[in-house]
Amino acid sequence: MKNISLLLLTIAHVTSIYATDTTTIRIHDHTDMTWYGNYDEWGLLPDGTDNYRKIYLHYTMGCATGGCSDWDYTTQIFLRHRTGELDTAGNEIVENYELARVITPYGSMLSNTWEFTSVFDITDFAPILKDSVEIRCHYSGWSSGFSATLDFEFINGTPARNVIKLENIYSGSYNYTSSTDFENNGLTAKKFLIEQNSAAAMLKMTSTGHGFDNSQSAAEFKPIDYYVNVNGLQTHTQYNWDENCGENPIYPQGGTWIYDRANWCPGTRAQVFGHEITPYITSGDSIELNVDFQAYSWSGAQTPSYIIESQLFQYGDANFVNSAEIIDIIKPSLKDEYSRKNPVCGKPMIKIRNYGSAPLTSLEIEYNIEGGSINTFNWSGNLSFMETEEVELPNMSSWSGSNIFEVTLKNPNGQMDEYGANNNMKSEFEYVPEYPETFALWVGTNSGVINTLTQESETSWDFYDKNGVSIFTSGSLVSNTQYRDTLTFSPGCYTFVMEDTDEDGLDFWANSDGSGLVRFREIGASWLKSFNADFGTNIIHQITVGGSQTLTEEENIRTWEIFPNPSKEKILIEGFSEIKSQIKIFDNLGKQIIKTTSKNSGFISERFDVTNFKSGVYFVEINTANSKIIKKFIKQ
Image (cartoon, rainbow, N blue to C red; front, side, top):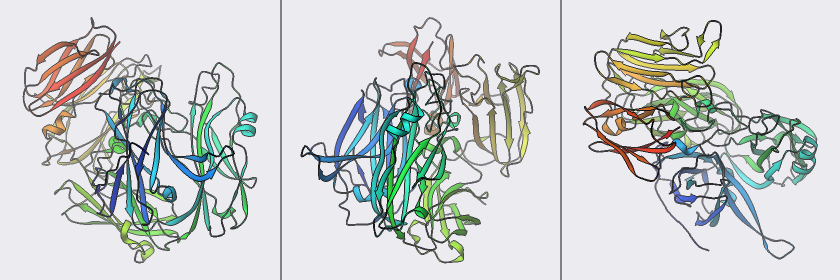
């Protein structure tokens, strides 16, 4: 055994702040993945004597030491489980169980310090997440690269139901040469024994499609269903697709980041679909499981393929009857995956789960800023056991106080919760920016149109008050037109939403629509906010007017932007700083090309001519009194 990395921590990560019953163990600490293959490391997990209500894997992807790759590659995190059984050659059988799958972003526009954390619920793998374990990071890339940091979080307590047994059903990459071959030689029917003490079962499935150089753009861009069959009976239909790539929290990227794909988007997790098959099992009997994919025919140079990991989980009886669980705080939150929805000054949003066997039909939800007045919402619905729901809560009476939001669940189905350990959650958050009562909205549309006859732009915008009522709207805009609207607000919380019906923003390299812009400007003064025009589906930006929030220097530095990016001729570098800022531009070999100091403080806008730059990647270093930020841009 070698490379054992053990880190015991009391967790207080930015997403949720748990109690001190939490232990975190790190296995893989910024492991560079620079070429196709496996990166294995051993670690020591808890010995399994304690019970855990939750086990999470926090997968932080970053750039490798030499920077991020320009391409979207598959990464998978496996636990290499030693079974204790021997094969025919006398070697111990090792089973790989996939714990997480994240496709890398197009990294050409990411700084070398970029990181993004995805959180996976891996509680059901508890029987094999113990003692000495080998964790594999598999990287399918052919260039450098990305890094992996894995934190395993164990929260003591009682799970909703105990796992009796887990087994792989399918594991690997399967070529789709034809529908018949795929079903007969790849996803074949398999039999499993249901244990005598098993009361429930679930089939979990993660499938991502890859390849597109053929007549069907399959499998990456081919939206299809798959079907779960139990004992020859079709029990579930699943749409194997991610339709939200244009709302990717990692943006802008290079490449075709906005295009929807077969259950993945560049830089984000692959979805794990759970299919409850409890009604179809009998303890002590065998069960036949089979997954079929929607049939299609293709022709061309590239064979479509699917990376598929599927497991059968068997469980005991539910441990509780009336119980509810808070799973996550979506907003307000600092979690990377929810960055498009935050920061907020309006309605909070949480995710709940029915933790008991009785259908969850009512629930009291208390929420507030830590130390502030408590708000109460009476939720009603109908959630079956283990079913989840995202709940948008009414506006809070006050956002004043600390930067900690807290939620408490009470009285599921009008009764005391049988298990209160998972009823509370907290999250840190940032306050939204404060703007003057009157400011100007500058919008420049590009040539993207809904209707070629009317030249109506694909882009439109609205300002909504805290109740979701539109108080200012663009109406129909005309393409290739500059707009200046002076807007006056009463004190309060507002949401600016810009939508693009083609989901390609106002500046996307892979079309011929040209570039647009969207900015806020203080009347007679400087810019307040410049949005990146390469935004995909939408911009959602909440503000306060007449409040007391102000941006700190640390928050200001995050607003620095470079656009257009990529660029052929000129770039504009804009941001906030309390002092004059020094700006340097380096080529990809580290040679300094430009060094300048801004003419003023406050909002800074500096334009640079890059016409004579060679095509490639360049780095911008921005230095203020207390901060340094490095951003990347592409010269076309």
